[in-house]
Length: 337
Image: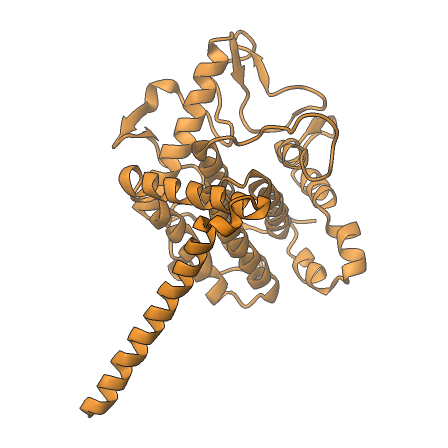
């Protein structure tokens, strides 16, 4: 039985730890407010980022209380797979995905678009590796055994995507949607002349970007581990599926973005084609009169505008999020080479 002296020491230790943490937080806040640094370029930049974080956290608490829970749910789902898989390669890939998710959340809260774009590139590189591992499981171990010197040459984004394209028998004259999106994320990677390129300028657009990429990572991971005969194969019961908070996050932000794009393009007599291969050099934005359908999601499937409604102050789409597989999805077979 724990004696009173032990309990008093434990309480003192806990109090001391909390006091030190508050002092550390107060020190940072004091530095930002100090007149000593009022002309510092660095501190002023930190101050702007700090103020933005406070504003966005307040927005989340007041209007989107499921924001953090939604991301937690999909990350817990990925962790459930990581904890059960025997593949060191898949563990490494999912660990990196989780790290990029945390980096992206911090980027969104501080309005750091460059970091968010960089993480989006990494997410897409992870996604195409997962796509290839489902189609060609022999590539899993081969990827893990490559050296730093040869990895990019064999497993760079373009090389992997080209192999996926051939495996899925996509016509060589068509361009994969992943290639077009990756190119957009790469626009600001290197220095360039002229005015800054403005991408993902608002909290809504930034959140929808992370939601889209994490949704795809989960789906591609699920497809890889539920492929019959794959060394990654595991049972559905071993996977923790994201729940209501993630669903609300997906519907709210992806649905809202799709609705905005549909309305904006329709006002100009245009619509966006579904996310699928299109002729090289062509645009996914086309006149409404060309082809059929009600328009397309920027990321995934067609979302007829009649299905879009508002729920709890957040835009929502009344359909099951296509980024998530059903818990009772059946495994597929490994494609033959």
